[in-house]
Image (cartoon, rainbow, N blue to C red):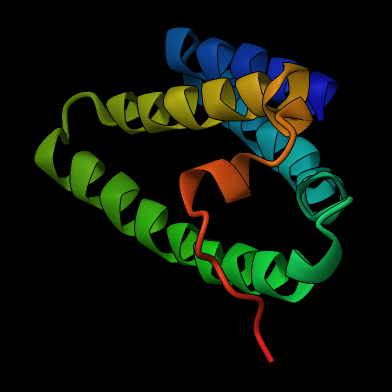
Length: 124
């Protein structure tokens, strides 16, 4: 996860600052790293949840809606800036930064769900 997020940041930045076919290839390379992310995120997110595993897995599945929203935002930025469509690539930077934080220390936060919502009940 750490390497995928670092490479994603590098490829995204390279895609923004390059032009032509090089920019396209770098953007395509971000997809290879992204393809490996889900399994890693899933494993780290639901580990040691105990009786909250079903709830955690359900919440993780509901978070997939971001995968449907970001392409719309990406397309909107391209439509709004036809002279410089590479601005849309900058949307990926905060996404990879969040993954970088999660991969370094975010997945280690113990019982963060319980402290955020002490009355959380597991799904039946």
